[in-house]
Length: 360
Image 1 (tube, rainbow, N blue to C red):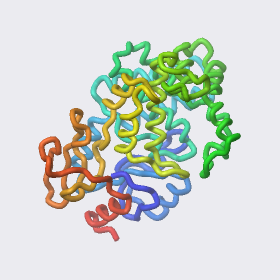
Image 2: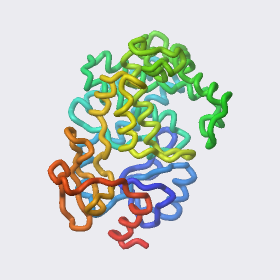
Image 3: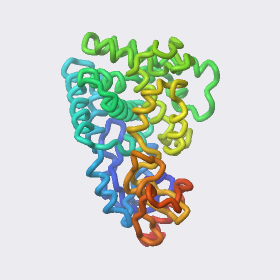
């Protein structure tokens, strides 16, 4: 169960580890939270954590077995930061090898659940976000049938797409208020800076395709993107893959200055973006890689509060759920009398945890 750090209570137990700036473990899975630990999470500006819920632990364990592990994500994060700080052939090779492992894991059927950015220290966001975008881009690329060399090029481009943000002032990157015109122009430069930093640090190791992916990740199908204002088929298709994954991850991740947009709302927005913001076939492939109500989502339904235990590729808004009030499993594909009416609030999740665990 995902919970805001501001809603944590002593006695709750972590269901997933929490990570620091360089992918190091801040708090390990299964740790029982104390006031001291909660204060440390706030100090490191972690916004969300996963809390063990005894009512759904069996479902959680099953979902974890099918999901790409946080360890693979943090290992990729480490290879990215190692290369960034020491761009040598050996560190680039390790980064590429990490992507090869990710490709194999996704091809084996592992699912992308959750986000590294949401369970990590906030000031490592540029890098954790890049790992999340990379993994999701690879999933879309696999659906679209790209060859392994192209997938590696896509992975490198997506992993390094926001490198230019390291040249943007932290005061602009983390500003809580709306950016003014000058600040917005400044942050738009990051796509160009990503391209230049990749050439500077990577040399001949980084392919022209990977460079293009990073350079164009803010271009839009309707021509209203940047830095070039490219339109339609002028945009490299893999750049569009990186772009849509970048938008999705940014929208659905909790930030210190902005609430996360619920996944089902983001899903609906992206459904309507085909041949407007992104090419239609990219949107179609992307939507097949995500779901409006991922496994583990806690939802309000017309029959009461429930936990999503299985997604439905054919009818994404009608997953299989576990109803808490009468402890039964319902497949919404076949049960038309029950509909999802929204997500549980963080306070409702806290209440469920307290009721089940005896916490007060």
